[in-house]
Image (tube, rainbow, N blue to C red; front, side, top):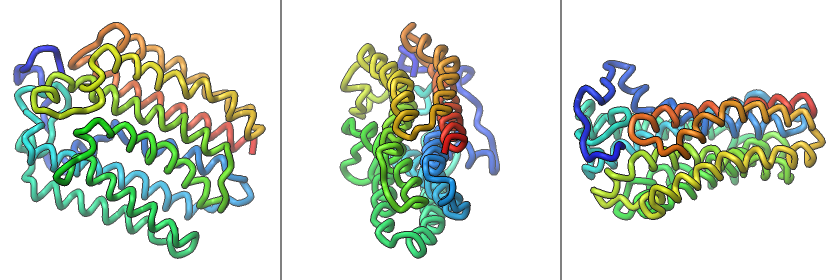
Length: 308
């Protein structure tokens, strides 16, 4: 959001229709947070143990739980009235902007959660039955982020959820379903990717500080304030590159250091945030952060595969 409490209709993005509307609600810019850890966790496993059907199931779980969480967020925020269409600078929200009814968005959410379970079922049946607990925890965390009577996303704990589930759990879990063990390599990789995933949420909440403050939504950004949130974003963007040499050493896969190339992409969003970017400029930062996340993950995965 911008520093002013409102924005004109001309400043707000126009909304698509039909199937594109549901793509909008799925929030594609957040999907690198689901894709990258599965790629890296899978690539970290010994190549002799890779099973492509397991990879596809893990990717399906990660992508659809992310989409379901986004729909759940849209539904719950819209029902609570915290997505004020007159004040939003970011993309329109389905319920908040009246583009879809709460019931329609809830059904989309249930379909996405159902697909999460569908992709996870083969992993439970043929890999390890205990994975059912991980799946249930991920689905519950996705709903209670903004759903229920006391959503933890409104209390400043959203970043913890993202770091744990889209960093550690997704990366280590993707490694485990291939190798049936856990080593330090996917754990460190999970920390790196968790930082980048959390950076996506941090910059999103940085943009929304004025509006969230107005409606009493106590995100971590609201609690920390503008300046500290910008500092947190920079830390989250830097730490993954500091961990690259450790990953290369732990896995004896020096080619993973090629991911330092992603520093080139990271420069612009970091400079923008440190320079005080607000409002619509932070929408571009969000997109840039997603690209850094995806490119970093792809290059680390390639490095792991070549060196494995």
